[in-house]
Length: 92
Image 1 (spheres, helix red, strand yellow):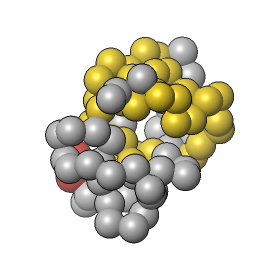
Image 2: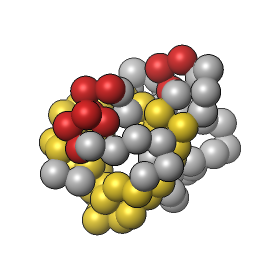
Image 3: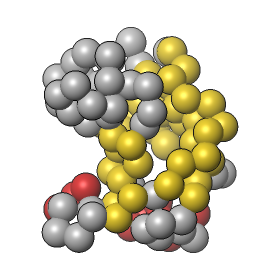
């Protein structure tokens, strides 16, 4: 695994009507990571919540993002606009 972000404070984004991506995090400095949907998996921490093998969404020429579902938001007690501390490793 390769660490792609460590203890970085990010804003939990909220975009109404964006489906499963309504709540998400944009992971800085990841635009150069290549891979198709479903092949880019990350694990790590959001605040003290452990993430296990979630999808890192590819976006053409942009930083990748991860979806933050209701279970995760409830566990960390955060919502859109809140700041979270993120550490992620890319599976390879």
